[in-house]
Length: 340
Image 1 (spheres, rainbow, N blue to C red):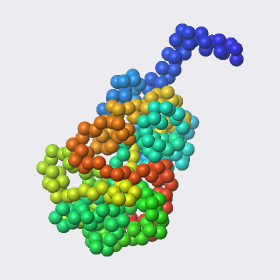
Image 2 (cartoon, one colour):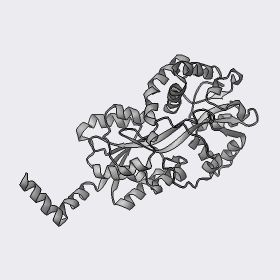
Image 3 (spheres, rainbow, N blue to C red):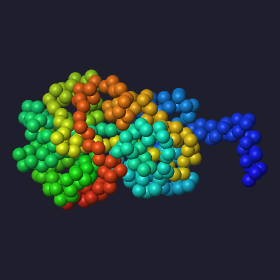
Image 4 (cartoon, helix red, strand yellow):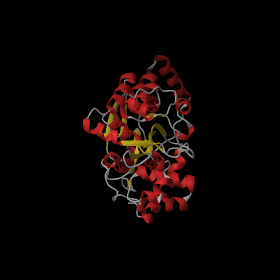
């Protein structure tokens, strides 16, 4: 042991031990389920700042998690990044993450937006859009109001099995209880203008076209349309209004993009640097300005016309790790209610 200590001391004095560590962490293997072309600049900036090359594999969450599990201790993956709290929680339940101790991350990311083994880096809100010709904002002030019988035949949404809607259901369970959430789900189903289909952008366009009066959509889909120069997108935006739900109660439901270091990461130093980089002012501003998401670091200045137009709102501060615990129950409730 003394000889090992002596060798280490000599290496450190020569700078060789540090050189070896840097060489080992000269690259980062990223498994990503974020499919946004705009993230290219985000990753390029990390490499420019640190000299660490990013090797990226992109696929759907389930495919990546299955790959990580199959690779086991031989997995080359250092970091897993994706969208939606329930997906991150699922990864954590599978035991693929390793805890990261970082004063930078703890100082910059609010406690309710980090779990024990992963961190949130951006947020998106689940808002309500309505047709300005046939509806008024006062008719849909809350998520609960979507189950009002007065809205029969007016509600559009994507599949109840989609993680965005499951996370909303999980939040409703936490705030209102399972019984009331099931009553709500049945009420929403009774108010469908059509069977759930398509993505959030499709719901917004359906509202603008008058196919339905109201819909639920993630904020960044609306922001994309608002920032678009296309005439057809401008026409859609002109016909709809947006509501921040539940401003007088628990606040608008938010979801996240997040990441964690993997248990068998071969480049742990690079992984921690990358996670800390995602919480930097530059990266946080990029989430907002490049992909219409809100940064989790409150002090970061945002320069995004659409987000500025949408304005400030009261967000739900339910701990993101707690939210994921009722996702499975939300799925069962939706199934019983026929929200598929």
